[in-house]
Image 1: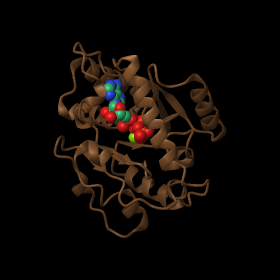
Image 2: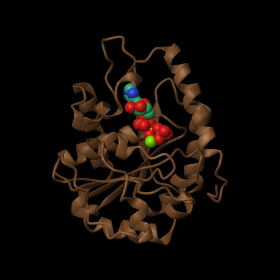
Image 3: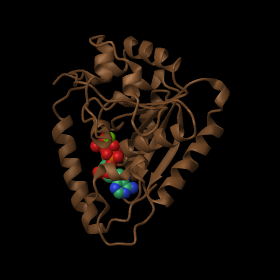
Image 4: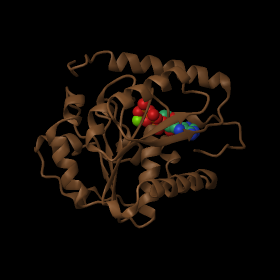
Amino acid sequence: MFGRKKHSESPFSIKDTQKTLHKNLEFTATEQYKLLRTNLKFTLPDEDGCKIIGVTSSMRGEGKSTTAVNLSYVLAENGKKVLLIDGDLRIPSVAKKMEIDSSPGLTDLLRGDTKIDIASLRSPHLPNWYIMPSGALPPNPSELLGSKRMEAALKRLADIFDYIVVDLPPVNIVSDALAISQYITGIIVVIREEYTEKRELTTCFRQLKLSNANVLGCVMNSTSSGKGYYSKYRYKRYYKYYKTYGYYDSAGNS
Ligand SMILES: Nc1ncnc2c1ncn2[C@@H]1O[C@H](COP(=O)(O)OP(=O)(O)OP(=O)(O)O)[C@@H](O)[C@H]1O
Ligand SMILES: [Mg+2]
């Protein structure tokens, strides 16, 4: 989704917060996100009420969170009342990208610990753009995202917002995205150019199909990084990935 940069600097050395539209992303990227918004409007007509859109991918580091932030921003920029939820309850990144506190957030809402005041979630960037960070990390993210409490929370939020965009973990590693798929309108799958593997993508779609998830489409996330950097990045990310998620069994116990 990002336009190619003319300079030789690796895109990964740019601060994360600069890759989001509210930080004035470059023109080409902005236009691509607007195109995504238009395509979504054709797929999900306005009259159908609140649309809850999950953003996932096959593996880590493919651009899910960046896409979720930017998509929610362009939807809000278009005048819709939009909530961005960080649904990655294992390695959340929305709060960091948005430079806000990670609590209170989704897990607090689900636990009923805090009465979250929706107005306090309003971002300073746009009056109709709201951000719900992850909150404190739970021991059982998958169960939480697939729970009746999650369903009830989304129903309540759907009465308030036109769009809810949920940033999710990758499908091939943990079942979280599949668990929540029953409660959301549809899922967008992010594919990273020269990074996502065909085999992983096939597995991802098979999993989504088995869970009866409504796949709305794919977003091709392009970068201009050189091959050398890519392989280094990839190795690091995958390593971190397995290291971090490896401690959870399928029941989410650590
Ligand atoms: N098109 C792009 N060009 C340059 N950098 C990018 C691009 N897309 C994402 N990035 C960067 O790559 C890193 C991973 O992106 P992001 O956090 O959006 O991925 P993710 O799929 O959410 O990762 P995770 O699986 O860890 O949650 C971030 O540092 C982000 O800023
Ligand atoms: Mg992410």
